[in-house]
Length: 212
Image (cartoon, rainbow, N blue to C red; front, side, top):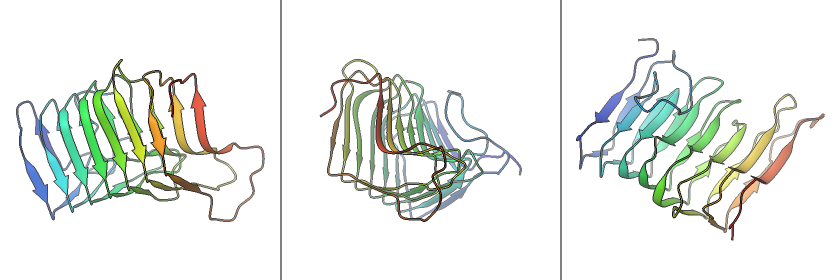
């Protein structure tokens, strides 16, 4: 139903593997993180759980895959579709420890984010060989992570928006002071459209440091 979620793994629902599956959330929720108890309309939610994997699957919802306060989550070789204008493909929040997202095709809403890494995360955070489709305001958005977090963004392809009424950022770092390794990524503006007075930036770092 409207705002309903798909699959949910929560509170000691550990060591699960979901593969070759289709998961769909309702359309009534809003994209993004910020709520450690879940985002209404998420296609798949992993909340305060450990060592869960979503592989070779199709997931859609206001936030396609929502991860909060979890350890060692893996999202691999899947299609993640964030629906609605504020939709998010992959949202990570709630001070999680360790995330690996690789070889996914990800899309979000026109005011949303392809991949959202909200603040407070720790451990190894690895995004590699993902393709972020055109259509999101932010391809990859990274907030302030915990001290000692190791962020790797490698070999991702971000196709950024070129809609005249919306700012567009390929990779956006907002207050990231724990440092990051960012290499071999490609950010492309491929669609035609007027820029007007809006911002177009392949890489944008705001009050961030330690990036190599």
